[in-house]
Length: 225
Image 1 (cartoon, helix red, strand yellow):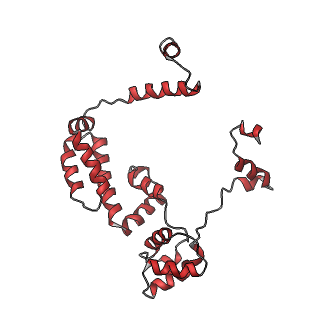
Image 2 (cartoon, one colour; image 1 turned 135 degrees about the vertical axis):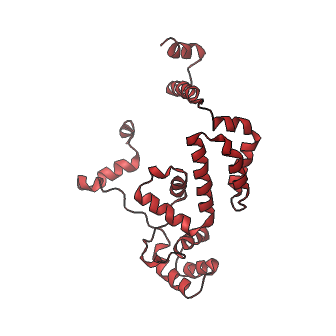
Image 3 (cartoon, helix red, strand yellow; image 1 turned 30 degrees about the vertical axis):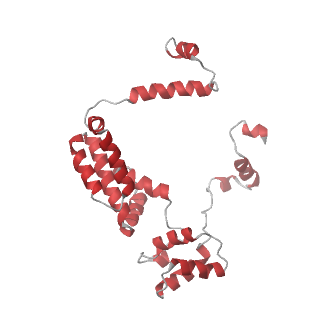
């Protein structure tokens, strides 16, 4: 096992190769991970349709039936399933992860696949807060792309007008603390990208020698190369 780690193979990867009977078994990908709530989903939807919408009570009921998961997982699942008009035909694990939904919201619309765009539309239709975050994020991205820093005051005012997104309001407050620099960054064509690239290059050299590169050696490897 230690010799295989030299090639960058993890223990679980080696086990997967060892257990496979055919090479086709290795290219099908991992099976879809099931949630501990899946076996109780039909019962939960039935109770919900009967008018029992107290998540704490539903948690007690399925816990008595053998559910060992957390209350928060059940709450998040019901927030996703309950408002959907065709929820009984949804796959059991339909709710996207936080990271995936965040990627849909923050990425440029042109970079989203049809599946991603449909997932984003479903998320925005179920909760007003993500819709507001998406709207403000898109406006900020437009300022960055078009270099229209003059619109920054209007954007900050609009963010402060939405009381239900305090995290974005705190971000806007941080922009006000360095307003002139942020406006210049959203307006002027200059950036610190070249400097950041040089810094990352130096860090990579130091990591390659486990931090033993002092200034004289870095000087030779970078300036005299």
